[in-house]
Every structure is written in C-alpha cells, then in structure tokens.
Image 1 (cartoon, helix red, strand yellow):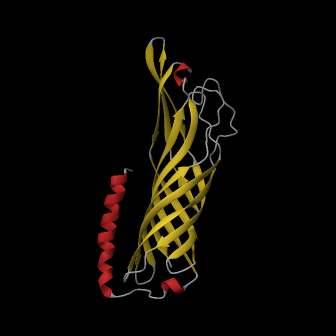
Image 2 (cartoon, helix red, strand yellow; image 1 turned 60 degrees about the vertical axis):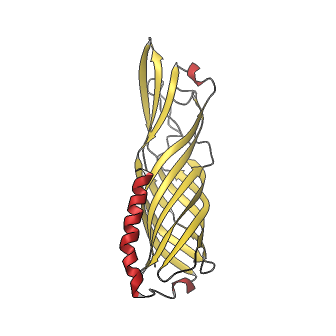
Image 3 (tube, one colour; image 1 turned 90 degrees about the vertical axis):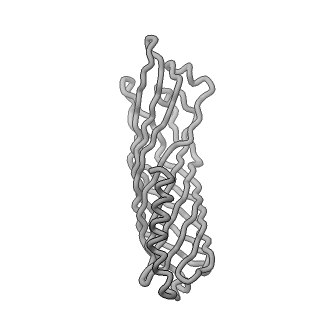
Length: 235
C-alpha cells in the first residue's frame, strides 16, 4: 500500500472522530492510571535497503537486481503502556506480521536477457520497546511522537534449509534488530482511547546469509525497511 493511501485513510478517520470533540471531555482521569492495556491492528509495507558488490555484474552475468515487496498485515496483542507522566509513556506492542518479497535478477544467457526470481515470505514476531511523547491533552485530542528499538524473530526462516544447486533460494537470518520512529494522534472516546499511528522501522543488521549462490553472490548487504499504519484501542 502506498503512503498516499495511508494519508488518505488518516484524514478520513480524523474527520469522523473529530465529531466527538464537541461533547466535552471523555474519560477525564485516563492519564492518572499508571498502566493501560489494549490492542492494535494494522497494515505494513515492507521493503529492503540493499547494497550490491562493486563487481556484482561478474556473477553469472547479472546486470540488474531488484526487490519488489507487496503489502502485509500486522496483529498487535497486547498493547501495554506504562505512564511515567501524563505526557511520557513507555510501551510495548508485540506483533505478528506477514509479508512477501520478490527478488528479481536480470542476467545474460547465450546472448539473451533472462530473468530469474525467488521469494521470501517471513512470518515475524516483533518485540518493541517504545518511548511515546504526547502533547498535553486538548479536550479529547492529543498528538504524539514515538521512537524505540525492535527485536524480530522470523518463524518461517529458511536459514537452516539446505541449498539446491538447481533451485537456489535467498537465505536470510531469523534474528533482526531495528530502530523505529513515527507519530500519531490519540482521541479520547466515551469508553476508550483510539489512536491512529504511522511509523517507520529501519533494520540495523545485515540479514543476508552469503552462501555464494546465484541470488546471494551479487549482494553485499540486505536490511529491512518497514512502514506501519496502525489503529490502536486502549482502555
């Protein structure tokens, strides 16, 4: 899903929720509780930051490498927030995410251009630790910024799969670490707090397992880049 679609959805939701602002202050003592719990649902757009070896074209006559990623989705349960103050919160939102990426290599074979593909379909358990900084509440609304670190574990990793010379795959490590930045808006409804959030995760670890196969040989490094759009429900 393109970022422009996220923005369109964001403004539609803002328009709908804004009607509640005219009816006074909802759940006025919400910030006085030390802990809050909730759930979140969302979608993701996952890509990779990758670098090629300087002489990558010498590997099997490869002259172009591209990685195409489609949309994914995320399930966040539970959301746990420790309120250090009314505007400073430490929280975690463990999640399970699914996405698919296609690795496409163009190469020359017998004077003709050929294309070979392989796919990566990780199923990730993500364990974040996030610092959330809110503005002061204005009636039933506040804005916030977030930043933190995330550990991810790939349940579907092919790290230990034996390579086949005739049908190689791209092998990625199952452990990843990333930093996360973003922001959003909180709306205080009569019975719970509703949030709209956009954030970006950038991987800090090279996930590539270099085993000198057709798909790994041209690559120097491979790191994740994930856009998240989430809706949070906190009580």
